[in-house]
Length: 367
Ligand code: OSB
Ligand code: MG
Image 1 (cartoon, rainbow, N blue to C red):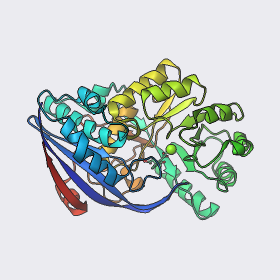
Image 2: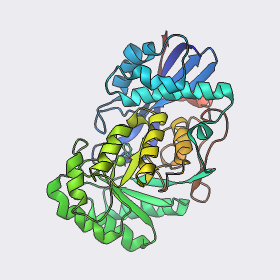
Image 3: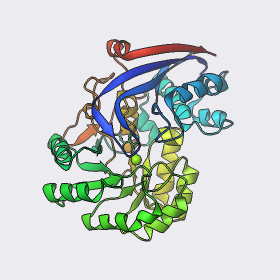
Image 4: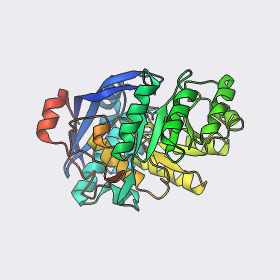
């Protein structure tokens, strides 16, 4: 395959309701899509970088700049193959989300041209995956209970509550009291705590949570290992895991006993599969995280989540969790699950009219 060029396409996607975490409140998502054009056909990539560098060092304008200036030019020339994209981009430090988007687009183009699905290529073993939902921080416990009630009604099989100091024990207690002990429940702190909060975090042990996600800063692997000895609830790293190598190190140090795999955060779906393999070899369960993806990224996440080591429900929610009008055919829950796409490549494509309506900017990068 040979790259012809890449269209960088920015779209504005209003959220159905504000999404508040310990690091920001989002009301709309500014998303960078890549239309990768090759001599064998086109493919779509989605960059999961947020508008501001509050979750990770990347941000959407920075990702676009890295792509235009360094990453896209680096994969020009003969013999383009998705399995070699990461190696060609390795010379540039960081920028995992930008790299992941480019690899995703090349992979989609290649698989579409060959008529193979991403799920099959990655090694999927199931035809549907369970849907969990990430529930933001709210103004009141009542508002939170209403939101959780609605998600459970829709069929979500696992609830993840965003927490921060001052919004942790009470909301968890309230959800347990109202919905009972059978609900699969976990929390995500997005680095909002320090080791000095160990006793407060240990108080969550009373609520039989599946895991506590990323309580401490991303660089603090040793701190997470120390914390893991002071709390009973399993620690699950998100922000800290940026590669298969960092996953292996965190596991070896006892910093994480469950891993949230987000393809964008680790440089792509192929590295995500390697993390899955490292975790499986160590008996560490994994689940698929999310970054409020459109149907494109959602399709790829669902394919990944169908691998055998994904034994916990992921943040693989339906399109309607964030968007009233997705740019692809929406992903809809059926008995709490999403169907794994079977068509070539991602198995979904953007609807022309929806895409046009949401587009705020396009730029063609010829190589
Ligand atoms: O920490 O998992 C996270 C969204 C944006 C940035 C970070 C995170 C999240 C979520 C939502 O929790 C995941 C999703 O539903 O896509
Ligand atoms: Mg997280």
